Length: 259
Image (cartoon, rainbow, N blue to C red; front, side, top):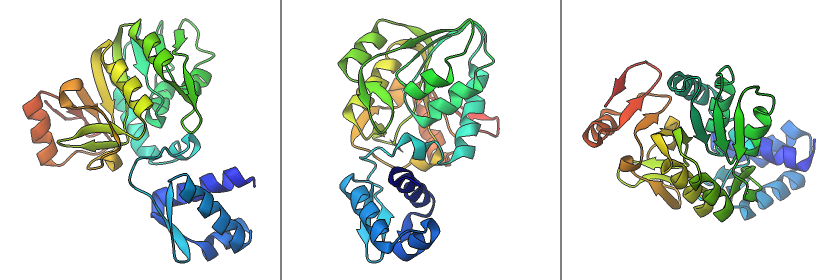
């Protein structure tokens, strides 16, 4: 197993268990404890973990991007539920924007049966996923490559997005707090998402329940910047009341919604 693959596996375990023990990882990956310590040291330098005695815990300050390979394996069932709901809102012969999030990748996979679509995205993963789609027009934003997210960001990406206007834009986020709004860990990603929401008819935030009550470093927007929220679990009544007050539609797997 390559070192980068082992690091991603460690991050995936941390995403689920929130902590790891050096001795247990050493046995699981059949490497020395010193090798595991070096892996954890590198992850700590990247701001993803906090080393503790005999192991490490996940750094949950949401100011660092997990590698896409890790995020794709996190809360898969929840993201599939979100994708199912999002797909029900996307019709043939329409245009959409999808951001570089793992949630948007799940949505892209779910709408591959649509006909005559126009797709604009800054995600290289989505571009590769959709490369064989016939009768689709697919645009890349171009821009600066973000290594961890495998997405294109920056002034060039934002300028390209501003040249279009689509039926639906779907973005995700790192944190969603009832008063602060939805936030991301990177200023360029945050601005790209915000630009997408400014250039569409319907603005959708696709956010799984693990992001609720968390705040990342950069504000993307508030409830006034979105029309619809799609999540994987029915939010608490306090959140639903806030959505009702703001006129924001909230969809979740039970099939009911509040607006």
